[in-house]
Length: 203
Length: 203
DNA sequence: TAATATAAAATTGTATACAAAATTATAAGT
DNA sequence: ACTTATAATTTTGTATACAATTTTATATTA
Image 1: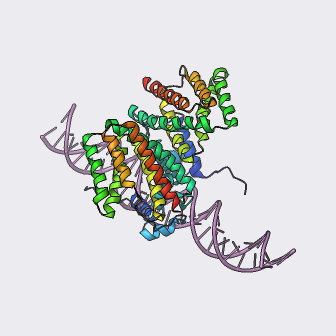
Image 2 (image 1 turned 30 degrees about the vertical axis):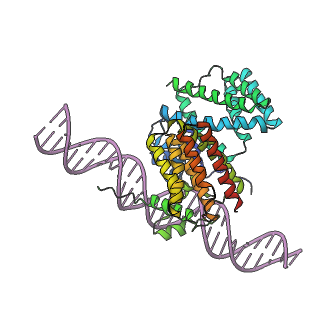
Image 3 (image 1 turned 180 degrees about the vertical axis):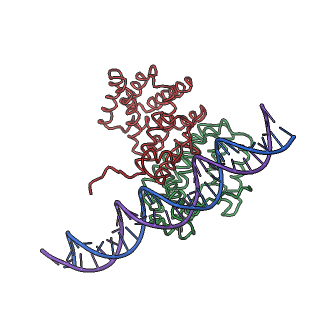
């Protein structure tokens, strides 16, 4: 059977609501009313409920409202993220393949040459590659979820380039390339810590 | 209105199914049929679906079946667990309160004196206390979820006391008490690694 | 017999109806 | 005007019906 691009209503609803939250259309704290959303999409409440429950588990919705993370919440998320991505960077220094290393390099290059859109995408991919090299679906999944919440937070910050971000990526890349595990982990942790501070300072 | 201890059908269903999975009544790999479960509990399919979706997100159900983790899955879970609980132990060495330290000590003591039931509960609490001291709900939540899967795995292993477990807890406790962060982290990681090996060797 | 096609049954996904609960608006008394 | 109580409204939780899909059984053919 050909893969019919899942047009199941509850998948559609999930993606629709998720997009509207992440795009900022549905502001943080907004009450989500099942019936209104259902009507909006021309489907019934049942699949809408399903998707809301899923987003609730994912942490984007809390008590029927778009989640509104506090500074402390963000610190907690980053504490875990720093731990996991620090480990991932260390892991890369030993186990990364030539191909992934090449892709990583490409991300860094785009960082100093590409358009604003391209740079954003490349920065995101930079982290995804590093986490992906662990080959640990549990870890990848946890980081993915946290990413949504971080993204939500960053949104209000308007997206704005943080100074030194590219240089930091460059440094991490170099450490990995030279198989320096300690340095890779250390730089990644410092990098993420600065990112946290940047987010917090513009609230 | 008196607080009627949430007898909402979907909460009831969630707890019922979860219990049956963790108790082993519903074996790993068993197909979960919404209608059968609904009938079994005398409620309709709607709340049963809700609870299944929740358990799916939690990782106890995958594709309508009780999750059946492979050795590799368990390794991945432990890789994350070792990272997080290693950090938690390190954190404890500096920040634990006198009261939590006392409770930790109590767990260790019961470990060498209590009944089999008591020992199991105390060992579980030992880890909960350490993780709890981080005061990081994100971390606590992640570990909680992984615990369910580990528990599920351990079940098939019949529950059996692992040699040296108490002694290892004792060592971790001592390191924390002496504020030796490096040692606490190292011992916790070794401890969990042995636990993983123990689980894997009896499959 | 094995492989394939077809029919039957079981199971899930979705819509809808209604009851329970929560929320909001309105009225009454101080 | 400010509470407090009561009614109206909205929103959620649950049951049920039916359609779409998946699974299983049965029949057919090589």
